[in-house]
Each structure stands twice: as C-alpha cells, then as structure tokens.
Image 1 (cartoon, rainbow, N blue to C red):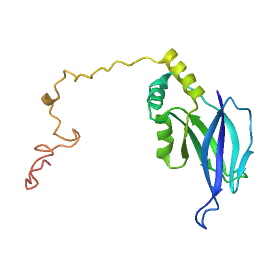
Image 2: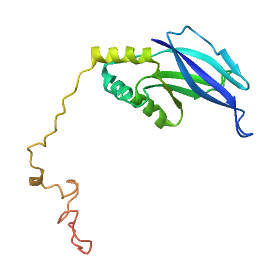
Image 3: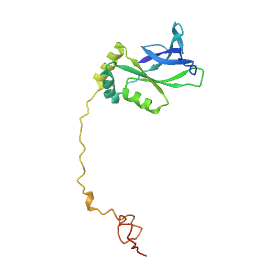
Length: 176
C-alpha cells in the first residue's frame, strides 16, 4: 500500500540548528509527491515529502501483532540526512517495531514513530488474520553425548610434553 509521508519543518531552538524536521503523519493510498508543501502555519511548514510502499511480510506477523497491541499503534518512518538538495532521504516505512528498532540501533538513520490511521490498522489486522501462524515453543534438549570422557586438556597434539597444559608453572619438566 502506498503511504505518503508528511514531514514538518519548524525553526531550530538554538543558533546551531536552523530547522528541525519531524515526521508527523502518513497518507494511506497517496499519489506520488516530491516535497510538495501542504500547509504553512507561521514558520512551521508541512510537506508531503514522498510516497513509499508499505510492504507486509508473512514472516513478520508476530512483529505486526506486537505493534498493534501497543497503546498507540504506529507506523515507523526511517530517514537519513541528505547531502543533496533535499534535507532528508526517506528510506523506508514499516509497521514492524522490530525492524524499526534494528534501524534505530545503527545510529545512522532517524526513526520516527507516527500514529497509525484506523484504515491502516484494519488493513494490517486483516493481513495478520490471513497469514499469522503461532509458532510452538520447542525446548532444546541436550545431546546425550558425554563430553567429560574425552581428555582435551593435553593441548596441541603436535607438541610433546610430559603433562597437560594446565600443570603448575613451577614444574620444570620438559621432554627434549
């Protein structure tokens, strides 16, 4: 589903930062846009920056369930600072809080959380109902192989020595 990304530019609060950018809304089903000005309120300006597809994957339904169960279900927008003519490159939109966390952990991307519109919540919930399969927890069992019978304290087999490598340092016995 195409999602239009709305960014708001407000003046910076220090003299080191001219403007602060924040993702404030998504527009489900939006058409193409290239930094189209939507609204101006004093010095605050909102732009329809771009439209990106929101892709859902069957393997991520657990993450989508987790996201929808939050107090405020959200869409995450991943952005990078741009050296070009646009202030930010918008990389990705995702409904998965796990994927958003992965991008946030790198420190190279900005991840903004935007409240999800009701129509988008219904669309994602329908996708989950169609594709979600609960995974049964299977406790891993230890192998029956006994590792304590093997003598692995002898060190490297290519080196001849009288005793094992864990002998007391005061022992001066060596084989020549």
